Amino acid sequence: MTSQTTTTGGPALPQERRLVTAIPGPKSQELQARKSAAVASGVGTTLPVYVTAAGGGVLVDVDGNSLIDLGSGIAVTTVGNAAPKVVEAVQQQVAAFTHTCFMVTPYAGYVEVAEALNRITPGDHEKRTALFNSGSEAVENAVKIARKFTGKTGVVVFDHAYHGRTNLTMAMTAKNMPYKDGFGPFASDVYRAPLSYPFRDDNLDGAAAAARAIDQIDKQVGAQNLAAIVIEPIQGEGGFIVPADGFLRALTEWCTANNVVFVADEVQTGFARTGAMFAVEHDDVVPDLIVTAKGIAGGLPLSAVTGRAEIMDSAHVGGLGGTYGGNPLACAAALAVLETIESDGLVDRAAKIGAQMFERLLDLQERDVRVGDVRGRGAMIAVELVKAGSTEPDADLTKRVAAAAHERGVVVLTCGTYGNVLRFLPPLSISDALLADACDVLDEVFEVTK
Image 1: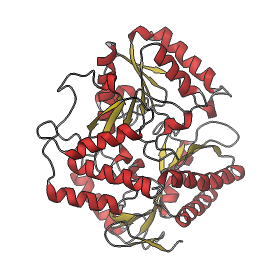
Image 2: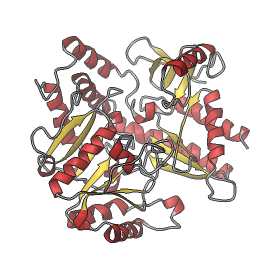
Image 3: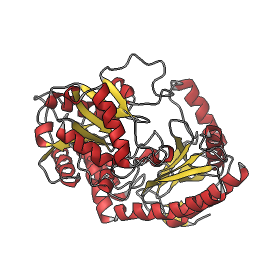
């Protein structure tokens, strides 16, 4: 176990894995019983430990356990759970005012966030930004804007995609359970194309995978009917799938040639997570529109669509917005997050986290044939688990490994269409020592689950 201290706003938290009860402990179990009686059962919980403090790379629960956080609230607390600059900015803003609605009486924070996003997103063309609340909401607005600009209605997404839980984004999301089952009918004019999935593509390179997808789009949709292609540069919920080199670039070139808006859904990959500010930078791709959320505001609800000025400005006045979109508290947090990423060198830190974890996980793969694939970029890493001697997905093993890690005080998440992927999203404020301890636990867990 590690023993360091972080000051991340509020009381200093020892940076250590510390178990004083079973996981979950008695106080967490009591709260979970209250949750079952008060909260709709459709709202699930991965690990029912109830958190009282968090920061650096740890979560401290009501029973006094300190767990290593390899989830970051699903890639949200990239700069930590209570980064000092974020805490200070939100405290100042909440003392000034909490809300006016930007569409009624605007404020500078919204404009400043838009200016920042226009500056830092890929491409040196003129840009505009609109702010919203959640990733799903931003994806829907990107589609609205693309349809308005092109005068076309079709939308292409990809196998294994996850774009949200609202009606349109459920249609865009691939996986049925738990996201779609029983919630239809869904929005129409949404089509699915094959993704580049190197582990399961039998050595199909990026260019060939793109040609396969484009051929299907041409035959089943037609460019003349297509407003947008929407894609995660690295798939999130679908399994942290990194497309083969050249796949994204070929798609963007086809979009440009056919008056189709290329939309990069960077909700999970954005803001230094992958060792670049945005994941498309790894592929030297400049999207027409880029959708961001999650890591943008340190845990406060904020999302954005940023893109080419002529596309973004095609929507009529009043066509974009929402009561809480660009809330002043979230905008203050976002500006502080961007300042923290720059001042703390978190793009480089994500790359170093990735190098440290890849070394350990690749070593594990050499020793355990059930680790079929190790993939990702920066601090967005996954292992795909399979039945020994095959590429057959092993969802049961994945559940057992995750549960065993949770019991030992390491928060890991699962994902993937087949339910067989462990994903790791540590906050970029985590220490090397905590990462090493977490990897030691993973080694132990894979041994005890053989």
